[in-house]
Image (cartoon, helix red, strand yellow):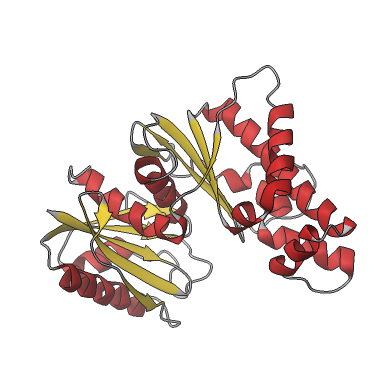
Amino acid sequence: MSVVGIDLGGTKIAAGVFSEKALRSKVTVPTPEDGGEAVVEAMAQAARAAMREAGMVVRSVGLGVPGPLDFKEGIIKFAPNIAGMLNFPVVAKLTAALGLPVYLENDANAAALAEHHLGAAQGAESSLFVTVSTGIGGGFVMGGRVWRGAHGQGAEVGHVTVMPQGPVCGCGLDGCLESVAAGRALERDAGYAYNTPMPTPELFARYRAGETKAVRIVRQAAHFVGLGLANFVKTFDPEVIVIGGGVALHGGEGYMEALLQAYQNYLEGWQPAPIRLARLGTEAGLLGAALTAALEVGEV
């Protein structure tokens, strides 16, 4: 038996049939700009196409989505990059469209689940996944399952305060890790330092060329990530930390050197967890969505 995973993103929807710890098919479609019901129909169509391609019997659907979620009610409270998703009953809508049970998970949690079971944290009892990209997200897996906390807001690592009264974050608070170390923070700081808009690829090119301003910006961001990881070790005590995302993976040796130096400094006297680079890349979200359903039906 097998399950379908669906990864809902701001620009694309990926669906795939998962069986025996591997994807047996994959279909990608654009995310409809008009949102709401159109997004549900696009997800259903992608799932049906993936099932036809795999030619396998499917028992359930795992759905990975962005935004704050109400897991009990199966609702997307708010998805900032997808229209029509305010307090949207996505589980009920997709269940009706496909006639299959649907299991909901946050997209960062889904990626954490994938790296734990199939990626860099395989074999660990517990693992913390942190993705440093446009924003910063993460997930904590213990005993093979995602730990969500009492209100579904566990392991929101990007919104841990690391610089009180620092830059205001998208969440509305100041000094969050995301506000000082994510891709958008790097672009903001580069724009100010160079007095011109600068996307992260250009900033990293200048960083690799050794430009003083770029080196300071990138290494400062890496320092804050290392500080954050040290705090997470003291909070969660994971067996393994997995770090992914475009900023972390493309920052190069200098970025990781600054990150590890801060990590070690703020863990002096404590037992550190080994840090590993993520292995699953862009498929982590889809694999994690499928694993969410597979765990519920006993396929993992």
